[in-house]
Amino acid sequence: MTPQLMDLVNSYKPEYIWSDGEWEATSDYWGSKEFLAWLFNKSPVKDTVLVNDGWGKNCLCKHGSVWTCSSRYYPGHLLKHKWENAMSVDKGSWGYRRNAGINDYFTIEELIAKLMATISCGGNMLMNVGPTADGRIAPIHQERMLQMGKWLAVNGEAVYETKPWRSQNDTVAKNVWYTSTADAFYACVLDWPSASHLILGEPITTTNTQVTMLGYPTPFRWTAYSSKSGIVIEIPAIPVDKLPTTWAWVFKFVNAS
Image (tube, rainbow, N blue to C red; front, side, top):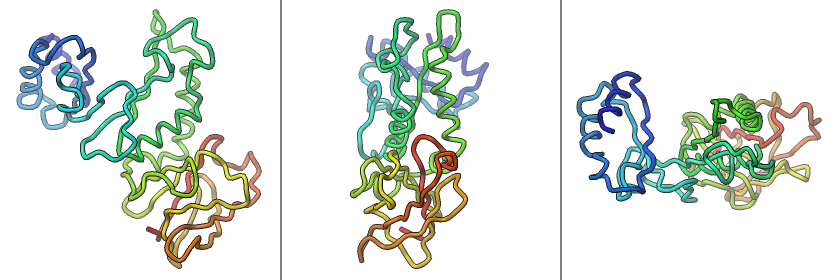
């Protein structure tokens, strides 16, 4: 397959080459070393291209710009190496299944939870949908991608070009995941608070700390949770139609650590 791969690279100059089916044989059988040597030394994308680790059954979690390790890989903690959670909207298949029921697909709430858990631990998420035999994207797959796009249009600031924070999830509140940038950090709250306040155990506040919600115009009032760390955010009565999103809400912290 090396000539075909070289032709694809020369013709389309990809940024990421994702190899699959590695379990059938070793990298020597596939000729992976020869192709990768050409790719990173002589190809037109040698200085920019990324590859995954699916270049032979002896390569997973060992070799590659990005480790995928296994389908739906999620280590649950930070890794030193770049990694990816390659998963599918269909819980049981990477392709289209005509007989799949609604419960065979992840909900948008579940997909957002997987996304935030992944990037909070430093990973990338690949969200797969399987086309029909004639190349169409099924309505349920379209819906999930459009929902994810709608959510990211509001909350992408907490996703794109972010890095893991010092804590990946909160120690007091459940289902809260953190990301950060150079001048702020973000708490993605998967469940809307049932009380008139939200308690987070990880943020360390200052007198100048400001708390906002992405997509919402008014800053939130807060008090310190303890003398060492934590914050109590006052949640006003916000009409449902005034909330910036329907699924998962992101609080932004400035002048806090």
